[in-house]
Length: 419
Image (cartoon, one colour):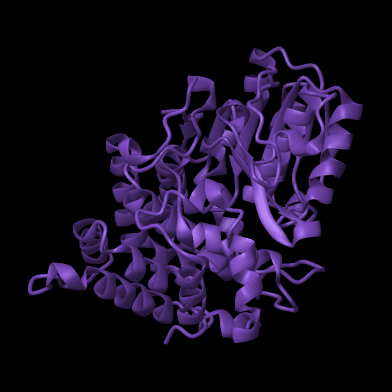
């Protein structure tokens, strides 16, 4: 089990200047994006850095849903700056970009593809020491403050991939629920769907002792290892919080209790999936994001079309869990019950359909786009979507039920329309 240190509480961001002092940091890189740089979370960090006399440079050019090029720009900045500590203030896009910048600045002779997951990159183990990185999440979604994963769009192949290594996980995650108050409604919704799928996928992933082959050396053991008794605890707890608080957090920006709890749920699910992994919703989501045509989501202030990560993940969830349920039906049924299904008279063989229906109702209640067709895809896109899923072996191999290309086609087709 590997997780970052976590500090939680309203207003704890004001301690970050002291943390950097305690680390003896002389040159700090503060990473964020253009929207956040004007908002209270970044302000709170800047105030603390000023108060404790921390010397820093700001990089606010992070792209929402990063690409290989946007990672390379940040890496270039990090190499030039010769920083001895990093602070990332933002959602998964910012924290992941900062992880990559820290990694490649610490490993200046590495080629970009050296650390990118196989089969797209070489997937080499990280053996260089990295600088301390403090992550301050401002969304309640990716759980990136707890994990050793950094995800980006690889433009040339039109597919999302990433870097996965325990070595890149943040030194400290500062979880300050005040930061969630600046999130617009759809960002709360989409980042919450990521938490939902992190919890569901890690709880239903292939059990860790069935993952083959066993690595010949512990340094080769992947960050994502399959469902396991420790991750299960975190995944189920996160799912219960999502069931209780996500709708409230979306519908009422002033509901501090709901938003604070979702912020914690994001970290809880991160601890779970950061060690267990995710499977088909995430594997299939990467081409859904990567092949985006003209879709521009509400509440995202961006100049490019994008499918928010949480949305790209959740749209396939009814089809995926209907497909995987035959392997661990009791887990799927338990998840449906937590999300509000009445399972008193349910038959175990219907577990997948019950969970799928429960998810559809959940998404319908929250005004989620009606399937992949609503975000610009049609049946003609299915071969390209399947082709973009095939390289995602790091996650697809953790599905409890193996899948063929035909299975993937059927799952994409079933996800075209949800309601």
